[in-house]
Length: 259
Image (tube, rainbow, N blue to C red; front, side, top):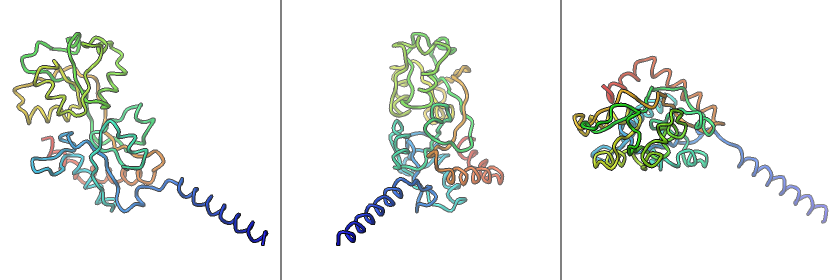
């Protein structure tokens, strides 16, 4: 009886070890019923809610097309953009896809798809502002989005101009809706953000109200973020993006949102 009990105990220990091993094993998001894409639903024109509350945008259309090519449903999940990498690491989302700039700092946390769109960090002021160049931002109030690529650019600024902003840094808001409101109400004298977003918003709100400076805070590229060990998903998405660009579908989506 003692031998039987010992044998049973050993068997249960082995089963438990296998179970724990399986729990730790990371599956590809491609093996799930649906892939969850995290996005900031206020980031026009990449992903945002229209007047009817429907989620639309360039990245939404592109994701829908990728979904067809990889034969997998994509669920759009609005998230707190400041928590995007944490949401990915915890498995709450499988993709970060919403005008997500590729940076060295982010590469330490996520794997990126091949770049699919160029971008720049654009400076916007009100039309009658005396600010003409980046150097004119000295002692001025500047705003941008919290945990955006702009914040990373500011943190790594080598020119020294960011340290000369009023307060020694920018003012950070959770969304670019709040950032533009800050400029409109003249609480800030300039804002900095992704060119694709600020130029789209300027057009929607009235281009005659604003002016984008020729100076910027550098160029970058957008990519799709995913967990580093999900090489299967990265390969599938990269191949889908290549096909979409090759057959002209990408250009059609681009013209819809940026022409």
